[in-house]
Image (cartoon, helix red, strand yellow):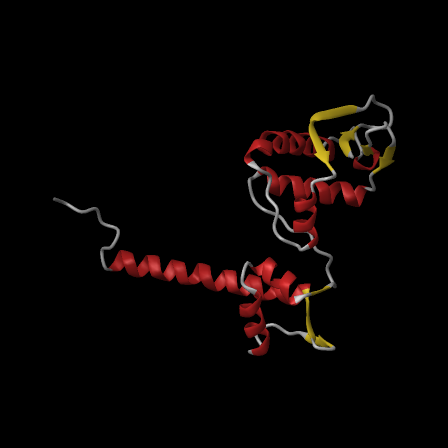
Length: 186
């Protein structure tokens, strides 16, 4: 089963984005999304994603159109109106993917397994468990399983990423001070 994404104002004819057809039988990608593994558009789809982003952005910022008038059109022509909040989330997801970045969609307030949290942080599950045991990320036990709140994982990720960037800046400064970036002369 596949579907096309189509957007149109209620008073305009539907414009199908023929190039952006999604095959719903793509099991490995669905598994990645369910596991909260970051997903990026393959190189072959980059032009399609960029075209979709341009279409969504023009609709979102056109005062003559309402994002609430957008619809998802199925293979048999069935149509479902997208709530405005869903439209804006979709626009943001496509914007990130159009830049070539990966994206993960997670429900805020949700608890995750240690494997899901490890996938989100791009670390091994064993390393994540060590972070939990060291108290660096809060968790709770459900029976013999650890559960981690998405907000706590994202806070840890933000702090880790900030610390990494600061460390890289410091390393660059030290390298410059010791002449490490000067070109060699022969």
